Amino acid sequence: MFTCARCNNTCNDGAKCSDCNQFLDFPCSGITEAGYRRLGDRQKTWRCNTCKTAGSSPRAASSSQITEVLNEIRAFRSDFLLMKSDVQETSVGIQALNTKWSEMETRFSDMEDRLIQVEAKLSKSIL
Ligand SMILES: [Zn+2]
Ligand SMILES: [Zn+2]
Image (cartoon, rainbow, N blue to C red; front, side, top):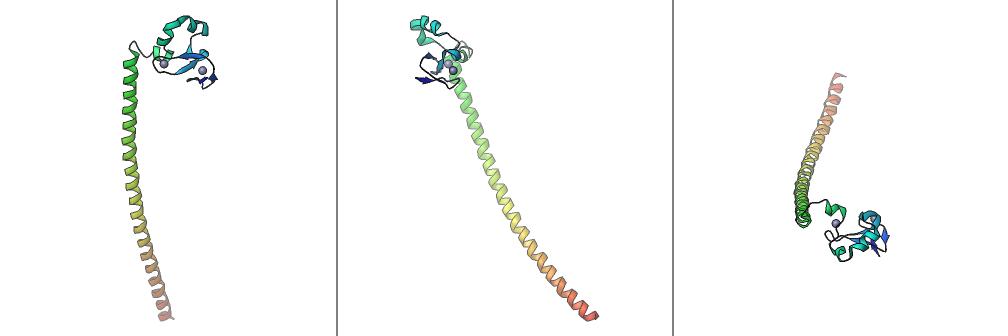
């Protein structure tokens, strides 16, 4: 029993790729069960379509593919870290803005209070 690497179906029999070591059921492997049986010993060297089309030197290709993916992951990781520090800086900036804003608000309400007092005094002196 194994799970097909392509369709995720559980199947009793299928072909194992000698390159990516993945099991594929016969509908997905591109080879018939009879055809696979006929390979005999060469089953050990059978490769799935993905690996077959990857090039004439699949091992080199797959390892360079892994390096490529690893590089992408690393690039993504550093991008992500950059983004994270950006966000952190931004949130610090927002916090500073908030502090500034509440300071401004306090000042405005102070001014408003004084204005009300002045208005009250003025209206009293007028009356
Ligand atoms: Zn399948
Ligand atoms: Zn393969």
